[in-house]
Length: 119
Image (cartoon, rainbow, N blue to C red):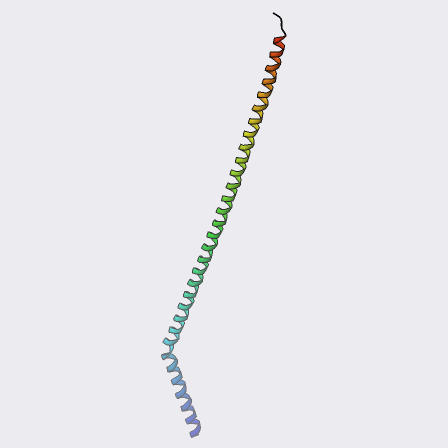
């Protein structure tokens, strides 16, 4: 009987001390929880900053690629326009030369036939 009473008394003492420790350590639990929450918030912020940096880097790279493409297209367009202008000038020169040759031949024929006219 004494052993039962001592056992119950020991059990009650341990239960009371455990309950007291749990109540007293509840601040520790809440503090650890707050620290874990803070670490999670910081991790999310770091991840967000990394995403923003990556997005910005990708955007800048894409803009640089588009600018390079635009510059290449502009160079091709200018080269095409230059070739077209040179071709047009060459054609105009050849036309003028052909026109001058035809006019010279026409004038020579006209002079030839005029020299045969009798007035």
